Image (tube, rainbow, N blue to C red; front, top):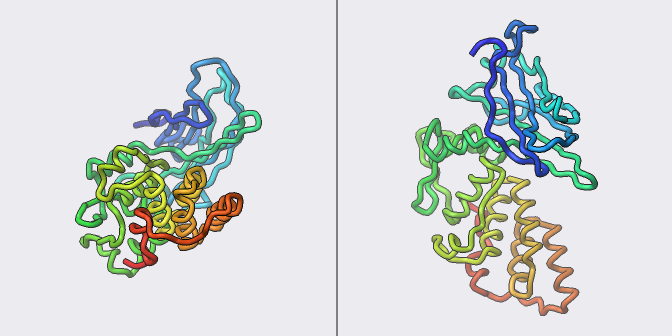
Length: 304
């Protein structure tokens, strides 16, 4: 592209503000194109100062966080200084040698926005990678989940899950690039939600879709399945979100099945919330085989 030229990411929202990432593949003229440069930009629609702490770091070809590339910054974004970053973020030749795989690399951006007493944090949502998956572009791993086929990128999965990392880059049979990996004891819509989270840091619990999915279920039952899947693959942030959403849904109809899931999957906080609910309402704690519990046998997701 040339020194001083840049590209801008799709905008994303953190703390009720719109942001974008600016990337200079050959940096600026002060460094003669030796370094790539990364900037965070506040896209302002009104004149307001926004203070943020943010960091840039690279993931290597195997999905590991490279602590040597971590750059932490603190800046108050104003109408006059709406972007801030690092001109000498990383040496370009080393980036090409050690971090690029299949013509792309992964940059993780963490942002904390200060807003009064609230602190909201998130990661950059990489819409481009999601599009790659949806269009089967550069994908290198295929899964068969109860007869339904899913494709993905090994590096993305390994970056979020140590279990996937061991399976896809280790000596296990799943590391064979040509093999289709069969996932047992999981509902396809749950597996898709787990993939969506690893690509977007978000997933959808749509009541209509749940009625039309392979096994019709309530949103609570779906979240229970997703929590078990997150625990199975050690995706801790997804598991924490499921726990939080299940706490919101605790009721007389759901507390026993949720308690069972919490007990089976080492969710101590969720378990304690269920026990508090039971204690406060003097619930008869007998585990009954309701319609949700029939979909959660004791060994669910425990073996493959």
